[in-house]
Image 1 (tube, helix red, strand yellow):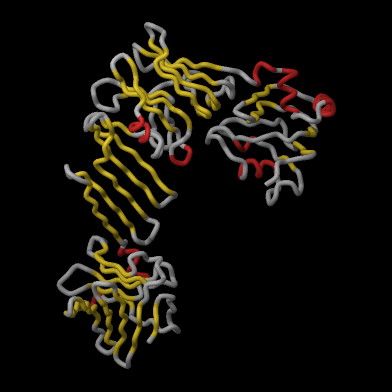
Image 2: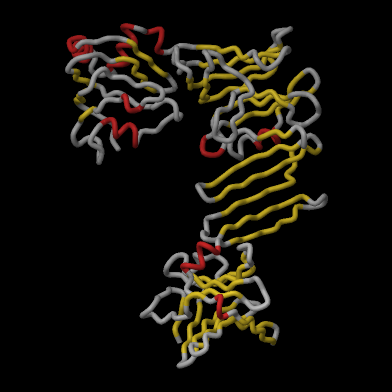
Length: 451
């Protein structure tokens, strides 16, 4: 979408944008220049990027025609600099500035002429709430919004020895988001994984009884969440740890610390339907994974959970897949319980065009399914019908399976042929729901061949 250009018109005044009130933005009309959006407000709220959920990022057009009123508390983001204006303009002032300075932004020149000291400020915040021995400094080269509880920009963070004044750690960042509390920056706020994270964390990460530092270095973890560089206490200094830092870069935000169990924890994800949760112990002053759990719902309605656990010698992996039988049985083509067993056969079509077979335990755990991935349309079923019976056959490298249904007496079951032997898993008629009718006139499936 192109940037706004030409003449814009502010219809509602006063013009204001506050941290939590996007609705305060007036509608700015510019027909034909916002794609499918009718107003500038729609354009900036739907298509423009945001730096954080707290402050809306937008740019004012080069020319503004005002019917009346004033511009108040307008924030414009440009190259890591927040400009806050608290000025009153009348139409003549605006037009005069525009006419004399057309090549450049109106807001830029209002800054220069009226409040130049606010445009490119530098600011250092002292963080002194975490230690009697050390304090922190968070310095912004620009982007400081005076009077705001939210700051964003480029700069550095340092840890200083109170007694000597020596700088022990210094970490530079290209972009850091800082939330102030009554005008102060605080340490050790950890609302994992998506909440507020302080730029300075002071905790014991390697469980040696001495606190270490985690210093925010940008937004390099998953989905642009804050990332941290880890410095371990090492005598009278702090030493950067690449291994611990990876835990605060390759997952989502800062890792958790369980001091009682001496374990660290991480979380990462991909979209809505895949999550990974890991636990680490510390061995030889490095984190070592002892548990990795993955929850995968990318092949719904199958819910897959895998777990890798350290047994003292190696990681042992188990995989469990489940179905919600209460949800699946009513929509199944055919379903019945196996005799002398709590297992249930379910033949259903989760993606309409693909048929899926599953043998499911009472708790929903899938013992076997075909195809293994319900989205796989290449694995075929063969459907056969006679005057008195219907059957559906499929197989893999180890066995051939045939689901059968007697159309006269209603008997159902599954015959499994493997290793030269055939086993008949008879179904309980009174538990049957649906019928094995896959005639194309009744139901058509892409992975079913009629013969």
